[in-house]
Image (cartoon, rainbow, N blue to C red; front, side, top):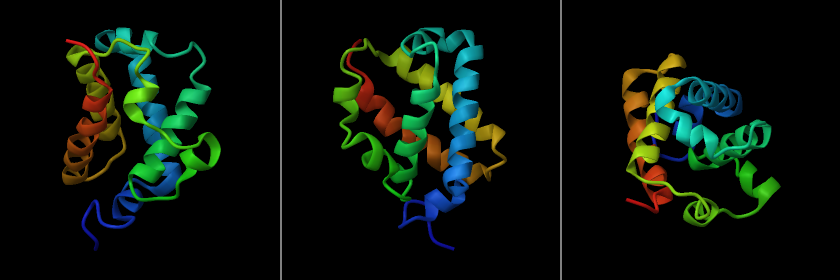
Length: 131
């Protein structure tokens, strides 16, 4: 078995497109339910269809799978895309909490959940522009 982060090993461990889509759907459902993430949820449109699509496509490429985000939306600069929002440590941590809970719902092995949340902390931090 390939190590996570090597070639498409992370993408495959996440369940490829369908697994990532389910992760993202659970992530946004959790974000909509948790009081800790209300500020982050309010930064998104009421209809999350496009947000769900963009995050699913981004995570496919980010985990070593096909570059579906770029195919549909073009290149992405994470800080630039989020620059119109005020994102501090509280918002970053709320986003990560939602992702941690969504990862736990997938039935992924614990080591994969830990790997993913550690790796996702990097782009989450890159979105932070306040504090």
